[in-house]
Image (cartoon, rainbow, N blue to C red):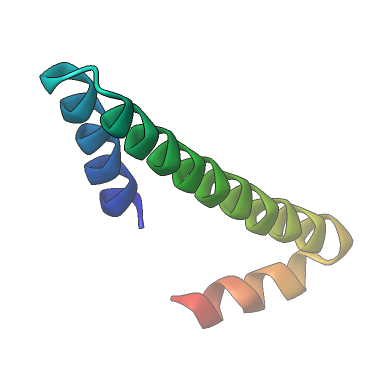
Length: 68
């Protein structure tokens, strides 16, 4: 997911460098919204893991081992 977000960020930069047309700015805006949503989603998942760890470190360890 990080590679996808990085690629989209570079797309935004290229769109804005090439021409400052309304279409490019609109596409760049949509990509920025998508990136923002992905960051928010990852933040929520991270917060859940932090809360699990605070409530029960052993449950967190089991969850972590299950992910790996």
